[in-house]
Structure formats: structure tokens, C-alpha cells
Image (cartoon, rainbow, N blue to C red; front, side, top):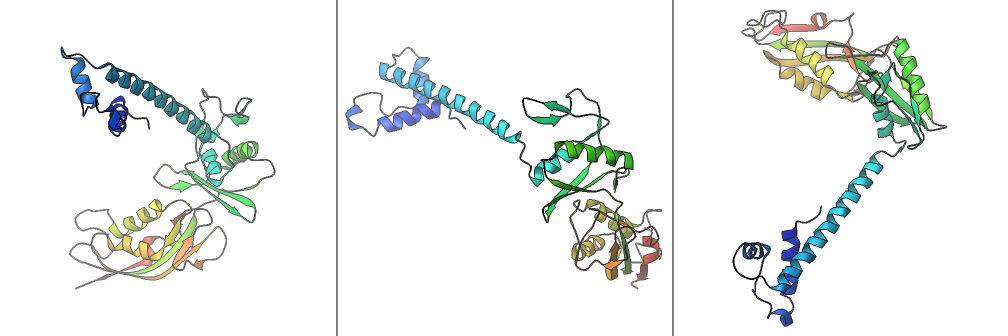
Length: 291
């Protein structure tokens, strides 16, 4: 970042004071502030001080030009087509459903018309490189705070988009599937002064704090992140009325595959988790009052 004119002038004065042969140049010591004060007074300003000030302004102008040049280089660097995992993720999130790509001969890349009106539908994405293959997991907003896969038509459009912008020779695999199912079994020891035997809040009818805590935790997990049992239990313990949650089992599966124990850490094949509708929380949480 460029310095101010005052900073440069004071630096010149500091350097000047290291030369004993220049001690006859007065006032001594001098600063940019005393110089500016003299300019607005009836006193005369020494020629050497004016020369220093002109030099300071020239250096300041030069540093301003360097700042502008640096900003231009940074912008150019940010717009480079790098082909990294981060680049693929950013491009996936830029996908506009309903718009065609145009070749930009200046930037040597495909891009959307700035005036296009297509909809950006991909809201979650992760990119991993496995055995020479770029694996892209995607999902979109389901409208109620969760995620869901793109429709077949949307997935076809997205695949065509990625095939046009990807690097030649790159093997890209797209994962666009329903959330991995999560099946739990929990003994939940609760405070009967706060919760009913069904887990419903006594003061807030229709509210089930433990179920809400579980669903919210799953929604807040980073896309394609790790489902960790310790953090999961911690989230349940924060729910109103919970005394002691005991997790009996935690299993997950992707699609038609069989259930497997999640273990301490689990990464969903789809990138996200949801409670299996065949095993709703109301049927897998055994509420036990602490009396």
C-alpha cells in the first residue's frame, strides 16, 4: 500500500538528519505538519523544504501508480482459468439453468452473456480429486432450508455445461443424488418439568426440541463435510429439557445400498444427510423421564 505524502516527507527529513553536513538547513527538526503550518502562515518557507515536498509528492504519485498496477495484476490473476478444485467448484456454482454459453475470444473461455437471465440453481457443491478423476457433488435448495438433487433435466444441462468449460482430457464425474439416509436409535433422558413423554415442549405446543436440534444439526453440516458423533451428541445436549442423550446406534446408507454403522465419522456419498422417512425421529427416540 502506498504511503501518504506526509509519511514520505517525514521519511526524507529523517534521512536528511542523518547527514551532519545538512544541519544548517533549518528549521531543524522539521516534519510535514510544521511545513504545512508554515505554508498557511506569513513566514517564508525554505527552498530546500519546498524541494523535499515536491519530491515527496512525486514519490507518492509513483507509489499510487504501483498500487493501481498491483490491483490490475491481482484482477488478472483472479480471472485466470486455473483448473484447480476450487476453480471447478466456483464454476459449478456459476451454472445458470436455461442459458447457453458463449465463447469469449479475448479471455479464451466459455462464459455467460452478462445480460442473461438464467437461474443459478446449484447452491451446494464440493470437488474432490480421486485416482485422477475430478468428482463433483452438487445439490440445490429444497425451499425449506434443506437440500435436494437437481432434476434429471437440470442435471443434463449442468453436465453439458461442465463438459464445455472443463479442461480437455479431464475425467469429470458428477454426483447428483438424494441425501444419504440416517437411521438412529436414542435413549433420551429428559426433564419432565420441561418436556412431555413424546418429546414435545410443555410451554410451546407443537415444538419438539430434540427433533429440531437433530434436524438443524444435519442442515448446518458443511456440504460433503464430516458427520461426527461427538458433535452430534453435543448438539442434542443443547436442546431444551435434555438431561442425558444416549446414542444406541447410528447408521447411514446411500440409495438402495444397505445400512452401515456411521462410526465416529461419516461422509455422505451424496454430500448431505437426512433422516430416513421410514425411521422418523418420533419412532427412534425413547424418552425416559428423570424423576
